[in-house]
Image (cartoon, rainbow, N blue to C red; front, top):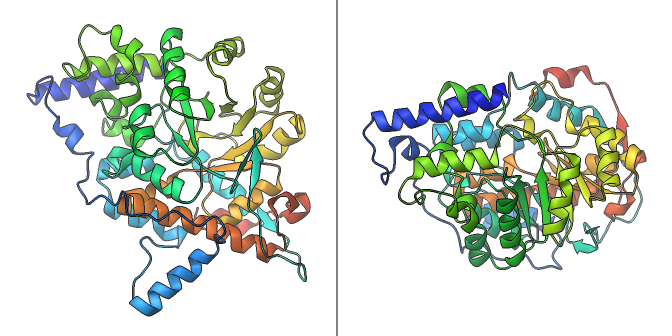
Amino acid sequence: MARATLFLLTILLSTSLALAMGQGKNETTSFEKSFIVNRASTIGTLQPKNKTTPYAFYLKDLIAKGIQKGEPPVVTTDPNLLEETARKSMTERGFNYIRGSAGEGATMSANRLAFRQWKLVPRVLRPTTPRNLSVTLFGRTYDTPVIMAPIGVQAIYHPDKEIGTAEACAALHVPFTLSTAATTSIEDLHKAVPDGSKWFQLYWPESDDITASILKRAWDNKFEVLVVTLDTWTLGWRPRDIDTANNPFSVGIGDAVGFQDPVFRSKLNSTPEDDVISASQNWVAEAFPGRSHSWADLELLRKHWKGPIVLKGVLSAEDAKLAAEYKMDGIIVSTHGGRQLDGAVGSLDALPDVVEAVGDKITVMLDSGIRTGTDIIKALSLGAKAVLVGRPVVYGLGIDGAAGAHGVLAGILADLDLSMGFTGVKNVSELGRTTVRRVRDPAAYTSLL
């Protein structure tokens, strides 16, 4: 409860600062303005990828534009330069929020270090074309094993926000996951991007009737899979955010799903439009109540959701077994990008034990630390059926909106496609433990993480 208390104090501090600066209930605070970057939108400029065109052809496109037109890529293709490029493009508050981690950043580092400790063992003189990146999840075939991770408050990174990221995902046939902490509502996202596969991530509200209402809205708007985040019943100890009172939820940013929910609105004394600070405090108390739900509570979700349910934030083999026992459809091995518990095991380090514990009883996916196509190959080789990619795509969004998000995601998929060929496989299903080898590489401890 100490974290919950600290979080509420942070909200009160932010509120006091806003009132001290003389903002009224309906006015945009300077705190909110400091998040927002005003740059041209690139929504509507993306061309959907032809389903028969290999993802690796993106490399040909980049080279052709560079040679024939002198045009560089929309965003850098170097994963080691992407973060710094994003820092220069975003507001300071926006960048610090997406880049920040819990504690000293040990879990975030562990996520990347884990990938450095597994090396690929390629095969040669094998047919590798045409390659098939498709996977089957919950009875549905997806073109790639990549899913866009749920990341909230995307308006603080670029005006294109979640709509731009979803458009980029749809163009590349990648499922987009809308966060409960989004700056775009469920209905607005579906209306703006009707095409493409969409999943919905739930920060599990305190009130059952609000939970049921949100799930109904998501299902009615064609979201296919429910992703329930279990490790964020309150926000973690994040020094970058704490030191600067960097909390967008306290001023109504990232509250769109809640603010447009009819059941939540019915419980307020005044509407969010009339009193955003009060509404924000009420929504934070719902979405981040300071206590965890229980395994028995999963029955409520099954009652109100007709599709697959995936639990996100599982790192323990024992919890993976429980998820299977409670008839969940999938789990995501995840550290929340290192933003919740510092000092936790890296996601990829946890993956083998989880896969061994549950086998094919439940669909296992991985999140946290993915930066390249070869990272994806390593995760799939260790038993993940799919991976979620987050920060890199949002860095692209921050650099150039929908076009930037598309550029980063297209690059990761092209890298995956090419690297599968270099590894000596045609199909994702061929990847397994013989594709990777654990190597304790001392140099990885001092290399760029």
